[in-house]
Image (cartoon, rainbow, N blue to C red; front, side, top):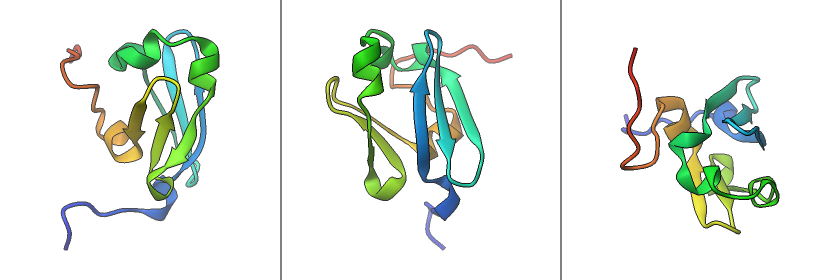
Length: 90
């Protein structure tokens, strides 16, 4: 068994940003919502830059070419913020 088991439904279907959140829809119907503050490049990008995204990594990644940001669905599902970003744990 590999250490990274890929599931077909975990591919990116849609991406959008609000002022506070990154929201990613997956092909299996799930929606991932994470604080935009976890990803400083996205947080400080313009709405036009945030809207300019591409599916990457065979469908399991998201790339924003204007700000050179890349995220994976595996990382989002794990709740992994950008390196160096502190999160509050309840």
